[in-house]
Length: 368
Ligand code: PMP
Figure 1 (cartoon, helix red, strand yellow):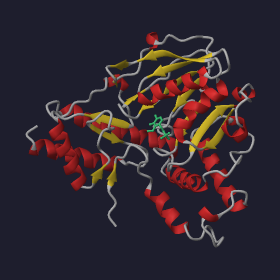
Figure 2 (cartoon, rainbow, N blue to C red):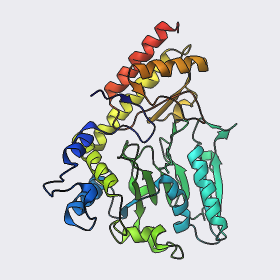
Figure 3 (spheres, rainbow, N blue to C red):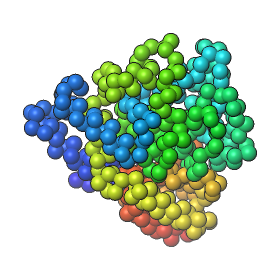
Figure 4 (spheres, rainbow, N blue to C red):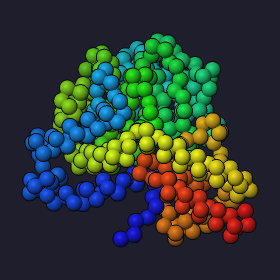
């Protein structure tokens, strides 16, 4: 078996021990004579996995008692709609900080949901220039409404490779964050957020489950004129067993979280993530005649490192040569182009070292 070095943007690499455990357990989960795929979600073998996954997240992210942890479906994009459906009340407005394509789509979806009930979604800041996003805004660029229902931001811009390194002060207004591409990669003070959501398929596990952390008191006033399946309260009051959950995705997330905790948990993940990004950025900065990072330095993402070569032909040659050497997933998003290395939790420092060695060899053979 030859496994490639996988820099996919998501779904992305998973820790090998998590996959191997699934392989071992697939046909017979802990002596039950059946696969986790075949178990009822209302019986103890699955319930134990479900509880363990919730417990791992609570411990690893230090989620305080003030917040529920929910497992939902529909990916982060469902949350673009569910956040306003639950928390944006008729006649009120929500502030959106638009720092990338996903952030913009979250605002567009909130506008749509708001329009149906006489509420609005405002752009309280945007860093878009000619369709591109290369930085996050400074504090004095935010035109915040102190009466807003919430402020929504996207902590890491997966496509363009920008990231909020420090979250803005939004006063008493609840802060809502799409952390799809950086939850569990650095310490965060969960208490500062009203709601955090993340599709699992980058740093937490496979596609199919979405993690939501939500402050309990926000749900007290949440809207009840929406279908039950779309209400956070339905999931909060049932330990996320309101209906059949994506059992296999949650099982794989449990395996992934257990493997990441075994590696030392969040402090170890954060240290390695910092080292990986620093290593790659240093290689890019070392040779400006070959590599160019379009993102402003202070806004650079630790997760998605985006860079360009002098020509598109050279970029194509780079990607093809990398693939021949077993390094895949390096093409930039189709709307952005260039190169993007996604350095999520399952990508190790040794993988980045390999990529940097390859870049140095590419420089030598292409006269950079
Ligand atoms: N937000 C961010 C920051 C993302 O990176 C993505 C997916 N790349 C999404 C939202 C959309 O997620 P999903 O496909 O799970 O709906």
